[in-house]
Structures are given as structure tokens and as C-alpha cells.
Amino acid sequence: MCAQKPEIITRTGPQLHAFLSWNHDELDDELFPLWRTIAYTGMRRSEALALRWGDLNFSTGRLGIRRAADVTTRNKAKTTKTGSARVLDLDTETLAVLKAYKSARGAISLNLARADAYVFGNDAGEIRSPNEVSRRWTSRVHARRPSWTNCLESPSRASGTRTRLCCSSLGSIRRSFKSASGTPRSLRR
Image (tube, rainbow, N blue to C red; front, side, top):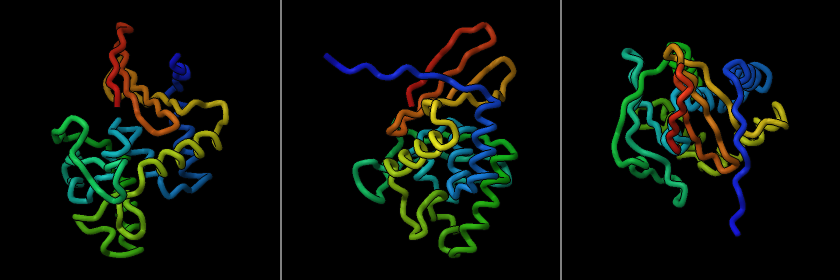
């Protein structure tokens, strides 16, 4: 008999906003830019960890996803889950957060802000471990509100659409969209 997965409980846009505000303002989490980027783009955790500064175009507000962190080999990138690159548009606030983060990384070492440096890399310039990032996410969600189950609903960009982000304890992310008509459609991340 297979164990059943726990039921996914979604949170509202205001709850996501409250979590991100707490994470930034009270916890002063160094990974806030990572959490915000994942929340507002829906990209996979491993894709976010393998982003390089050269993948971001601050003047157009676009982000190219070309690779993913390999969860089986330390500090190694691989192709994305789908095997193809894609481009996302970033909102102005997320862009501002990433610009400030790049400045902070550059203050640590100029090498951490070069085009080929990993955006969310560690201070040695390596890809962060996806499993360690998942553990950190889980600890922050439980620190914020122990009854949460790693599920947050993000604010909508398109009228009549809600985006729900759900992270299991190992960090897989699932996005689902609910249209104004109430018909859900899900994408496993």
C-alpha cells in the first residue's frame, strides 16, 4: 500500500504578501529575492537556482530560463525539465528586488555580480543545493506560521486568474491557475 500525499491547502494572495513581508522585513532573510522570484514567476526551484545574471535583462524586464540545478550532482547545472528554454516577464517590484540583490552580491565580491555568476549562488559562487534550499523554505514557512503546509496563493497578474504555489517538503513546486469561470488547470512543477 502506497502512502498518500498530504492534502494541499492553498493560501490567499494577502497571506503570500504577509509571508513575503515578514520574510523581508522581520526575518531579513538573505534568500528573500529567491522566494519572491519563485512566487511571482512560478519557475521551478532548480531553475531559479541555476539563473545567471546574464539571463536577466533589467532594461526589458525579461528573464531567460535556460538551465536547472542538478539535484543529484553538487554545483552542476543541467537542461530544464522540459529540455527547452523560455522567457518570462518580471514585474517591476521583483526587478527592483533583483537589482538591489545584485548590488549586495557585488559588494561581497564583484565576481558574484558578473554576467556568468549564479544569481542565487552561495558566497563561493557555486549553485546552492536544491535540497538545502527546500529545507530553508520549509523552516521559514513553519517559523512564520506552523499550521501552514507550504502552500501559498500568489496575487494575480491577469484579471480573473489566481495563481497557487504549492511546495512539498522537498521543494517541488506546483502551479495551478483558476480562471474566472472556476475551471482549474494545473501544471506539475
